[in-house]
Length: 423
Image (cartoon, helix red, strand yellow):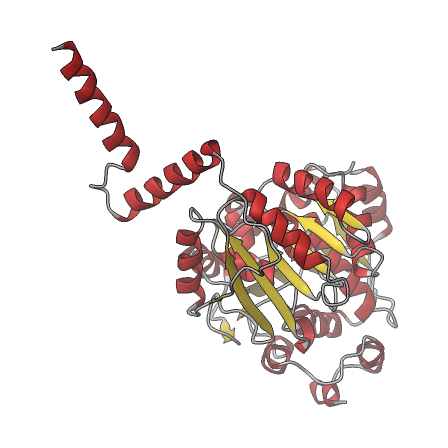
């Protein structure tokens, strides 16, 4: 195995082999030696590139074995799903060692986590808020921390975690190794890196906000919501091709509505996850999807980065994300580990603006496909057309502040007619 060139110990190599890793990915080739050499590292790599193992393997090598009761590594991630995912990967790669890992996150009571901390741990994987909560209770000793990892830094900044990150940086030892990983590199991530990385080695496997080459992308232009539903139903009737599908939407309400429709009309098990779902429900749904027990998973963007399932055949963007970086993360759920995947985007006239912005971000044209003739094109209701028109007006005003909008002109015309009638 080529992983032997990283001089990993026998236990880690055995776990790597059992995990099915045949040869290092490009990000692993570059990052593992730098971390092993003790450098601070800033890694820009899209999802599905092997990023997690690129920092876990050298960190586990550095930890070596269980020692004392206090943690030596802190890994921070923005959501409990991501923390759970990182924890599972840590357990998998450290299974032949006695290294102790513990995941702490919100959404559940802290009692069990406090008891686990009292037993001692080497690696803590945490959301920023829960870490600060437990630290404030005096449950997490920090003097022994030697390594800090920030994963999914761009999402962490999007979710407003900068104050918590700064608070954590103030209480942990100054002398430590810092590792930051992100799929995109907005200005907020650059600001964060400048605050806590010292002379970092930057590894950029793909330019910021690019999508994996293994993912084929195309889009359908549809007039309204009902036609989107008709197309979704048509695609999912092909159970052989669409065998493991994630449907992304923007809101919890839409997620629940799509879920209810698919339960009635689609073959195979369907689940939905969003922030209103309980922690156990979300974890159980994700595990069922990973294990192949669920064919279709409906999700909002909040849960998008916690989904780490192999062999996802399709990602369907039922709605175009208005946070454009989220498009990269959504479609990164398929085409993972060099396997091919397909990302399909539905967009109505009000979403065409956002799709063009996404294409500019990823520096790539997304192919448009004609609507299959079997799909019924529904008539747009007056109410929905009004919503679409207003959205388009707002977009035009963003691009041209002098544009007053079709509704403004219409209202002005009506006022003149009313004035003329009075005269």
